[in-house]
Amino acid sequence: MIEYWHLFIAFLIPGIVGYGGGPASIPLIEYEVVQRFSWMTTQEFAEVLALGNALPGPIATKMAGYIGYEVGGVLGATVAISATVIPSLVAMIVLLKLLVKYKNSPKVKRMTALIRPAIAILLGVLAYQFFQTSYEAAGLVQTIILIVLSFLALERWNIHPAYVIVGALTYGAIFLA
Image (cartoon, rainbow, N blue to C red):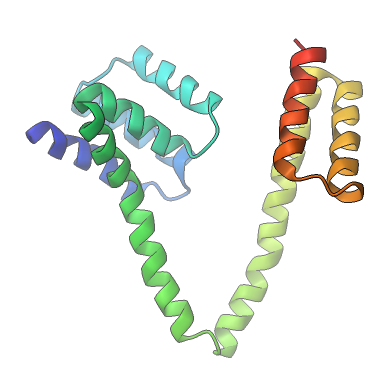
């Protein structure tokens, strides 16, 4: 039973103090898992991190699920994932209640209006980083082909994004393997 408590604490602390999401909490998780509780070596943790980065979804929850399962089976995975998600969930509920309470306030309206450009810039930077990664891995011609085909599929032919992603993966498997 103490092992489950340790799992909970090991993933709750990074969830609380890991401001910036999963990537920001990776060093904190590494400290808890490798140094504090010695559940893994640094090499094993690096392999779990690589595996987590290869799969879709939030990195912290994937790592929590894997490490929790390794330490305590299905219950361990459940405890670790819960500890990872609880801080964000509580913060969202509290902030949502505040936002609903003050939604008609001119200050809140200005604040949300000021956040939109920051989100647009962050999404632009993310798109640029995706382009740069694709350019380095596949080359300029392949990257442009994927961008143009994806844009046409989404905007002109109104194809669902899931099908566009599957198509891009299939294209990559055939032409970039």
